[in-house]
Image (cartoon, rainbow, N blue to C red; front, side):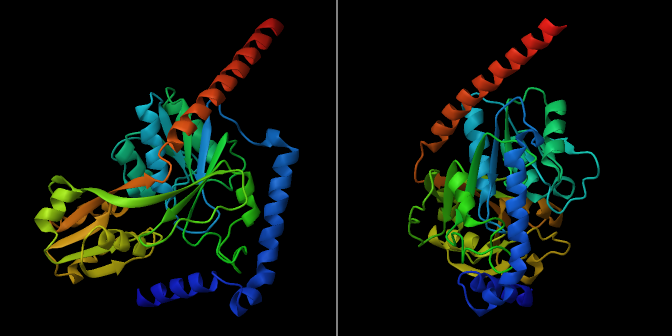
Length: 365
């Protein structure tokens, strides 16, 4: 664990500047750069290659490899649309899960071993239907087949999956921005930083102490996001307390925290910023399967874990585990209203095209 954590930190440090290591790796980035350019050019010249839904599709993704905070944005977007009368569904890759040839769909309390960490968390939190497959097009078709009442689709990740037609693109980055601006492996980017010039929204996920990011040259609507603990649930009993109440009751006790997410330190810093003194922290690799309990090494009477990890930790039956449900706080709280207004326009246009196509077919027949 210590070696992998050390390597992750060394890689992230190298990716923040155009130093010797990055420069030596630069030739290896050229094939990826060429492939990305060719892929975009192909879909620009042949837009019919992309599969388009009859309903609006919003992609929430990133260009920086690893965790930047997409899942809280997806959850916030789904819940906001539900509150405004929409019936959203979610599609995702299902990272770390062998789905097979057919896409897998469901809703409610889904198993992370069958759907993946993030999809299981999204489904459990929002109760929205979800479909997973490496091919987002297959996931989309399955979603529409099994849940025909869905009238807007949110793609969790998939920014680079151009076979999926999309109407809006939201990119989530964190305080690292675009790093050294280079593509993998010389840098942290999946696509050139210039990709940000063509997205609709750019959200920067900031940790405690980080200042607002300077706007970049893009027409995208730019805003920032911070996560704060809102509610805690004891994993074994389901007892739930809001953050102030939990802090008042248990905040003075020895407390540890465990996280298996892209940036575990972000979780730990959120807790300390909210008033906790952590006795010990354990950072596990992102998407860790929790094959063995990491909690036996901790003596604290209270152990805080992320909602993403909770879907894999119930089987340990450890009464010390409390799940932290974080709320996303946006610098522009009206951005979700703007999204909803855009989706109304997009939905009306798609409906008009569908009616026109249907009438044309009837006239031919």
